[in-house]
Amino acid sequence: MVTRIRIASLDDVKDIVEVYCSSISRWIRYINGREVEARYDDLTIAERWSHGGPWMSTETCAIHINNLLVNNQYPLVAEFDGKIVGELELYIGEEKGIIGKCGHIDVLEVHKNYRRRGIGKALVNKAIEIAKEHGCDTVAVWPAKEAVEFYRKCGISRIAYNIVHVEIGLNKINIEIQEQYSTTSFPNNYD
Image (cartoon, rainbow, N blue to C red):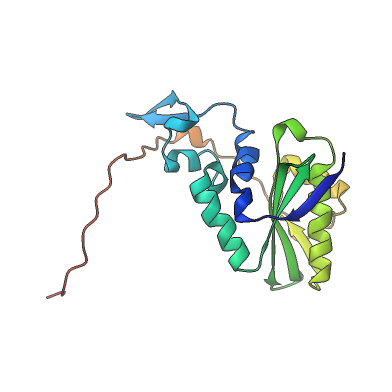
């Protein structure tokens, strides 16, 4: 079976969300400061976001993908046997210093059931191809510590900046998400 890489559309949002959500083994919410296991469908949009960002719900992912597309950036999806199984986001822009015109790989996610099949590498190769087509001097990524070797195998191996990884246990921070919100109108004048 062949992996096909293409630019994502808004029609792909539901499948992109499924790719990212596949990595979540346990959905949680906080009630009275306590962590409580929950079903995905019972979470608010903000609670879904807290599990990994805009890719965790169709509402926020649609806004995110739309922003990429209208700003001429590149959300790429990988299709395997007609099913979307991976997503990579490539930003083209100018960086000061030694980087120059750059294709920046921001995120890369492969569905947990499709990993170790070359899908991530195919997405990276397509990102490199697009960056070259746009005259980029550099393809850059700030990978998680455990992904450095993967990117080296994809040919991204020179270090422009040495990044120090600092791990912070966010589960030790007590964050409460308010269920109720209120709004007030702007005053007619400020006298």
